[in-house]
Structures are given as structure tokens and as C-alpha cells.
Length: 256
Image (cartoon, rainbow, N blue to C red; front, top):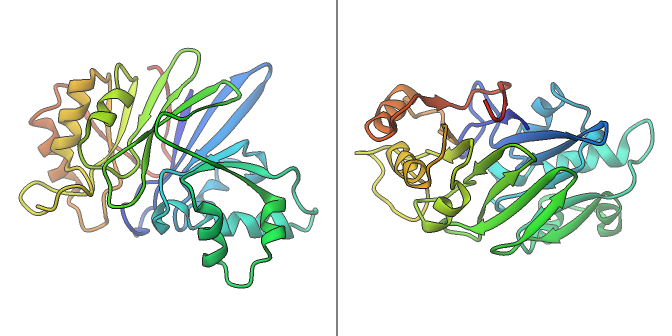
């Protein structure tokens, strides 16, 4: 399994990175499968550095905040108006209920039939499992102000846990159990952000990763105003190994 950080800036696109988007790829039967998890603002531009968007096999969306989904509207433009012709068949989008209506509302004047010609929306629910080529994706409802999901992504020899946006919750422990990499939301900082039920601090992310027995911890979804070195140090108070920080355009092979 290869994981590429397309965008990792939290809540809005930062000066060095788009908002949330992660490309997960694995090989099967002589070809490479490519799935993008979230497609936040600015992500489609960066995604094109790593593959032609027409090569995507599916999109998986954690929730419907713009920093995780809004570039689906841009991908519609790419697929529907490409000079080489409209892309077919519709691309599967595994997503929270209401995503189709959300995309139509975000793109004023969009013909619903044209949208359906480019995307096939499939609702995700707690415990939902979908097989996309060699990737088995399990969704769990996580702790965020809106309906939101984290994902356990399994290939033949690797496991990635992606929290989406979430505060600490038992579902994250289940998703990250024995994972090769826990890619965890760390938007909040200890001593600054006191609201609960929205995001994890890096320390809380580390606590969940330790409880789950994950092999690696990578912090992501940090807003541009966070001091990432402070976030890393706060996680290191709990995490016994190296605390990794998501870097835009970096790629990681799992297991490693």
C-alpha cells in the first residue's frame, strides 16, 4: 500500500498545502488501484501532480465540511468538460448521506443529471465495509459536530487508519488496532483549545494510537496557525517512538 499526502492543512488551505486529501494505492492483478480519501479545497490541483484524476477508482469522503469535500465539484468540471470527452462510467463516491445534495447546493446551476453522469454516490454508515479492488475499507462513526467517519483501510499486507476529523472516541481505537500507520487529526493544541467533541490534540491522538497498538503515528489536519513542533512535542510526551508529521506531496509505503 502506498499513501500520498495530497493535502494536510486543517480547516482551510494553508500557504504550503491544500486542505485534507490522501491518495491510497495498491496493486492487484497487474494494475494499480487508486482511491482518494477526502478532497478538500485546493486538493484537486495537487492531486494532478501524482496521477491523472481520470485514473481514480473511487472517492471516499469522511464528512461534508468543505475542507474535506468541496473539490468534488472541481473534479466534476474535470470529468464532464474535458476536451477529450466526458469521462465514463460514473466514479463511485462512498460518502455520508446527503452528499449528492451538498454537491448540488455548492455548485449553483449544476444539472443533477449531469452530476449523476459523473458520480455514483453510495451512503456510508457506521460499520459499513466496501471492497475497492485490493483495498477493504471499513467506516466507523467518529466524534465530530456533524456526521463524520474514520476509516480502516486494509490491503493484503498493510493497514492504514485514517481518523477524518474526530475527537477521542472508542471507534478510533477499533480503527487503528494494530495499524501500520495511524493518520490522525491533530487540529487542536493542549493549553489552547478546550472545546471537546470536535478535534483531537496531538497528545490525545497519541493516547489513542498507543491504546490501539498502532505501529506508527502521523499527525495531520493541523491549521496553518499551529506550531507543528509544539504539536509534535506534545504527542511525544505519550508516543514512545518517532512522532511523524504529514507533509504535502510526501509518499509512504506500508508496511515499512
